[in-house]
Amino acid sequence: MLYPFVFHPLFKERVWGGRRLEELYHKPLPAGVRVGESWEVSDRPGDVSVIANGPLAGKDLRWLLQNHGPEVLGATTPAPPRFPLLVKLLDARETLSLQVHPPAGKAARLGGEPKTEMWWIAEAAPGAELYVGLRQGVTREEFERRIRDGTVAECFHRVAVQAGDTMFLPSGRVHAIGAGLVIFEIQQNSDTTYRVFDWNRAGLDGKPRALHLAESLESIDFEDFEPSPVRRPPGGPGPVERHWLVRDPLFSVEALNLRMGAKVTLPAGRMQILGTTQGELRVVHGRAALTLGGGQFCLVPACLEQVELAASTPTHLLRVETGQA
Image 1 (cartoon, helix red, strand yellow):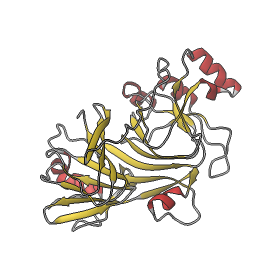
Image 2 (image 1 turned 90 degrees about the horizontal axis):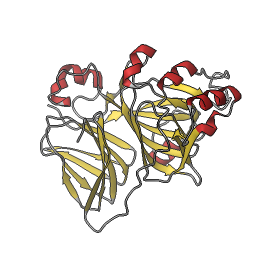
Image 3 (image 1 turned 60 degrees about the horizontal axis):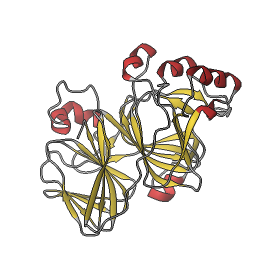
Image 4 (image 1 turned 120 degrees about the vertical axis):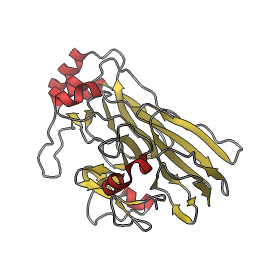
């Protein structure tokens, strides 16, 4: 009964967003709205992805887990209360707030949820950068002093990035996305963000957005200095190139580069999410088949065997699975 699923995206207006997802990936954005996020696979309260293909079109991801949880997720013990990941596309026309997500050991006490995430850079304007971790030698005392005098951005490590780079962000790592970036984001299913500084700008309602200084200071890892991105390796001669971007107990992400006509059979017995970053990918299971273009995703249930990927054009994709691969 199950098959590879695609979902209708959920678009989120953000003060720092724009229209680039429409231009790059033909997303049907609502008119006149600065869209900063497209939630592609989501099981958040009030924001559940709806199936867009096949016999179960119109059902949502929550229904799918309630009725076919073990088949979708695999033999998880105990079964998670909701889908473990949240997958997004981000369009940052302006710099996001300086922020942090609470680590697992502190999140419940602070009234939030932990969030570890990764960013894969799809597009970077000249000079685009990320704020990640602290500059070497920054202390908590200096950080707090600079919050008070409005110069806390000087505490952040800044990294110039280009398309194909990856940054891993464990909870507790301070960060912000700079202007001029389009990003594929894979994260824990969480929506807890503590803002440290928001550049003194107004939100969509014309008022300053709330800061969360006490929670931020509790959450920040003050021993986390100057992390480096994972750079995309140069292409080789083979029809299929693959390398790991993230291997973490929460989720693992593999990049695959397929030449036109190349085929790959997915490993069986594990839930996987595929995201095509460029090109055109055919996902075939038995008589069921779908085509993914750039900026499109599908969920492959763990129960499916002999799922084949075929590149109709030169294609690059991300393959995501939960747990340490």
